Structures are given as C-alpha cells and as structure tokens.
Image (cartoon, rainbow, N blue to C red):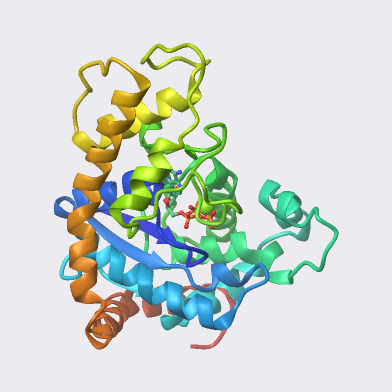
Length: 320
Ligand code: ATP
Ligand code: MG
C-alpha cells in the first residue's frame, strides 16, 4: 500500500482550505493508503513564536483532526516533536546538504527578506521536512505549489545519500491536490486562504460559529460583472463556486445572483462544519484522551523511525 504523509503547522487555527485541500483528501484515502497525520510543531518555531500559543494550537489541531474524521486506529496522528528521530535524521541529512542549496529555497529568501533577525532553523527547515518524509518511507506527499521546491530538495538529498552511502531511502513523489481544492482568501481571492495570513478577514476557521461564517461569506469580494460563473477575471466568484462545489460534492445549479450564491455558500459551509464543531465541543472536554491518542500515534510510528535512523547511521559511518 501507498504510504502518505500530511503535515499541519500549528501556526494558527485550521481553516476551510486546510479541510478541503488536505484534511478531507487524507480522510477519504484512509481505506486504501497508509497515512500519517503530522502536526509539525518543530516547523512552527522557525519564525518568532509564542511557546504557550504553539502548545495550545498543537492540541487544538489534534482535536480538530479527530473531530473532522481522522481515525487514529488507521491514521496515526503524531506531534513531530514526540518522535525525536525527526531531529536526529535532520542532522544526518544536513551532512549531505549544501549551504547553497538551502539558501536558494524561495521560501527562505522570501521569509528572510524583511531585514529582521532570521533563525538558522528557517534556513534548515526544508532539511527537517526531508527528514519527516524519509523517516517513514513515504511514497506520496500532498504538496501545494509553495512546497514543490522543498519536495524536490528532499528527492535530491535522498538520491545523493543513496548514491554516496548505499541504498537507504525511498524516493517520495508528490501528489498535487485538485486545483479546485485550493481555497482562496475570501477578502483577497488572489492569495490562498492561509493560517498565518495577517488580516484573517477572508478566512473561514473550522471552529467559527455560524454567525461568523455568515459574515465572512457576506463580505467576500466579488466583482462588477454580475454573472455567476467561473472566469479568470472573476477570481472571487470562481472561488465561491469552487467552495460551493467542494462542500456539497456536486456542481451547483447556477445561483441567479451574487446574493443567492453567498447564501448557498454559507449554508453549504455551515452544513460541512457543524458536525465538526459539535464533535470538537465534545472532544475538547477530554484533553487527556487527545494526549493519549498522540502518545499512541507516536508509539505506532516509532519503530519505522528507529529503523530508518539505524540504517542511516550505519550507512553514513556511525557505530550502532
Ligand atoms: P501557513 O500560512 O502557516 O503556511 P497554511 O494555511 O498554509 O498555514 P499549512 O500548515 O502550511 O497551512 O498546510 C497544511 C495543509 O493544508 C497542507 O497540505 C497545505 O497544502 C493545505 N492547505 C493550506 N492552505 C490551503 C488552501 N488555501 N487551500 C487548500 N489547501 C491548503
Ligand atoms: Mg502553508
């Protein structure tokens, strides 16, 4: 069976884009793929961070993953930092990665461009991402455009290591999510909906109450065309139609007006999120249960991680 890794960074509240683009495909594939759902808390510390906030968000994301339907019996939910092999393999992989290679990463250039202090971990995090993937013999990594270059780097590092020190790593491929599963920001449909987008006015959180959802959709940017259709010149309306189709699972019968479209989107999003909100309200009462699931997830994946690190240590010249 195909092995897949999906990661979520605890840098903010999970949103509709995370659900439609990552979480729902993960849940849908639970029957025929072996998936690991990873909360990438180490990756959330490459930029200025608040310790209490990371902890709280990691727990919240684990709880939301469960509420959305990730079944821990089939899909281990892990905190990256609970399996220390991630950091051990990270170091070993740094020893086959060039400084130039890491500095050429577009995300590093973009995120370090501000002129403020830059953490060394921001430079090396693509190597940690390579470790996350190679640790579990992953075949498929769902990647958005922004992570393409990092997956390429993972393949480069793995290929180089295998060539130099003997066959050690499985080469992962990417799975490109459906373009329609890419949710754009409702207030700024030129950019994707994101956890760490500053404003947040165009983001639908998975735990948003109904009135907040209604307001966010009501304020969504549309245009002057007054035509409900998907069109490159109408990114806002296109996004609403995509969201409606994704939430209901079918092509919408043409809503007559933007007002009608927004009402349909509001209802469809609410129908999708209401059960998640309700299950979350139950699960959040029992954090100890969620902690147990995280501990069990780590225990379940650790043997594979340990084996990979042992193999890597031996190949690179360390005494096991
Ligand atoms: P950040 O802004 O901190 O990068 P994010 O919203 O991009 O947060 P990630 O934790 O980076 O979220 O990504 C989690 C998963 O959700 C990834 O698989 C990513 O491809 C997917 N994803 C993120 N944003 C969207 C979106 N707007 N539409 C569809 N999928 C998305
Ligand atoms: Mg992201």
